[in-house]
Image 1: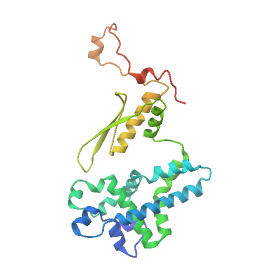
Image 2 (image 1 turned 90 degrees about the horizontal axis):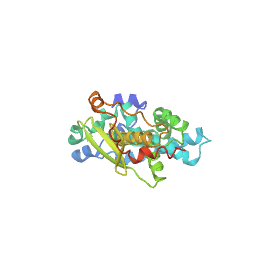
Image 3 (image 1 turned 90 degrees about the vertical axis):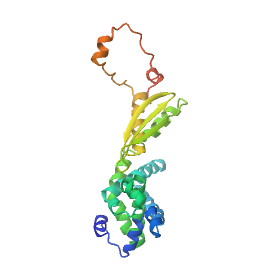
Image 4 (image 1 turned 135 degrees about the vertical axis):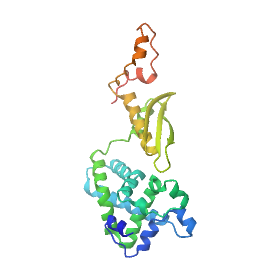
Length: 260
């Protein structure tokens, strides 16, 4: 608790609030004690308000839609979990035995919820100023980076909009592997029966985003990606007279439609 308070830069008048913020529902159910979900609810509201005030005050040139996109990018679960990891919040969590053994201290959803709960606990204990200070210490750089490119779409949204213009929609297929405490996810994005992009990451979102980004590059890049060179065995067996394999729809359509 003392180490965590030093990392937070805030010392609680009521340490039980911080303890409550670190209590996952799995532990609460086993030990018959309150969990952190109420503080999570409060912390989510405080985080949204601090980020909104900063965007509104520091970036008067941003329009409503742009401000919404910037805020959404920095308050999503992955951003919360990233800050939680910097603060080493996972080490301090109170988890049930099952969650602890299955790698709960590294799960994005658990870390994100606990981070919101800690923000809520700081607000409940000390009021607006220390809560705002905690958020701005760890979120300012993320906000400023997103505000620099407010119209940039994440890869999944970009792919969705590009395909929608042609009356098509992407389909994501995802699976996980590796130990529970350090999972790896792989994702494929399919369009009309063709695999257009493959990605991987430590979360489903990361894997899907990477797959979508590669699909956008493959489908809508002005320059076609370099074709892989054949292996020696294939090169020896190839005479050059063989019929060419029919190109999938997304290769021949690239020449007909340029990205605007």
